[in-house]
Amino acid sequence: MTRLLYDLCGIDEALRFSPYCWRVKYALAHKGLSYESRPWHFTEKEAIEFSGQGKVPVLVDDETTVVDSYDIFRYLDRSYPDKPLLGEGEAEARARFFKFYSERSLAPGILKTVVMDLFNSVHPKDRDYFRQTREKALGRTLEEVHAPSKGLSMLDQALEPLRGRLEEADFLDGDVPAGADYMVFGHFMWARNVSSADLISNADPVYAWVERMLDVHGGVGRNALRSVDVPGAYRADEA
Image 1 (spheres, rainbow, N blue to C red):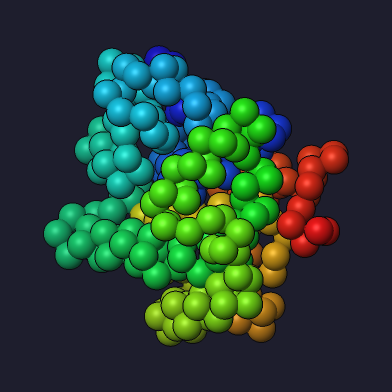
Image 2: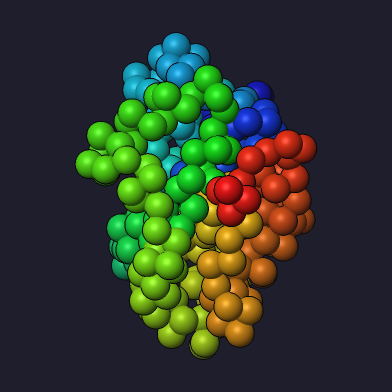
């Protein structure tokens, strides 16, 4: 069986920064499932036309195609029930809360902090598409969105619920990581892969959790290529 994951790439084919794809990569590692990673650019819509939509992640598992990170989590739990990601009933509802929390509370502050580094991590052939679609969605230019001080302040406030949980447990899901951790951590991998910005103080319990998450599953996160590792890559903090 060949399991394929279509995964967003940037200025280097090995630079993978989609928070939603990172969720799925951690989920596959959690399940112990092997897969082939297929690099994909924003403008390569035809490559995933078979999925019926135009975004990644797209997981192809034998004859089954699944899109959307949360739906992929649910599919993996149904098809490979060992080591649940989401659980059932109240447990799944908790994980779904963390999905929305990461997307609606954490992502805005992170975006304001790293948006120009993110733009410069996008492959040159994708930058016009990225700028046009994001500026339309945000109602402002990327340069107007870029406000690191404000972004870090927003993120600091949004992290309070995580701090409370991580003061009492190593992971959001308890003694070991699972779906809730991966839902949230995808956005920290997003920032880490495209920027050298320090989002969190090293005295913060969230920082310690990030470090643990980077090392789980054989260091899948820590070993990932970052834009700062790409020779000649431009960074906003150098401007």
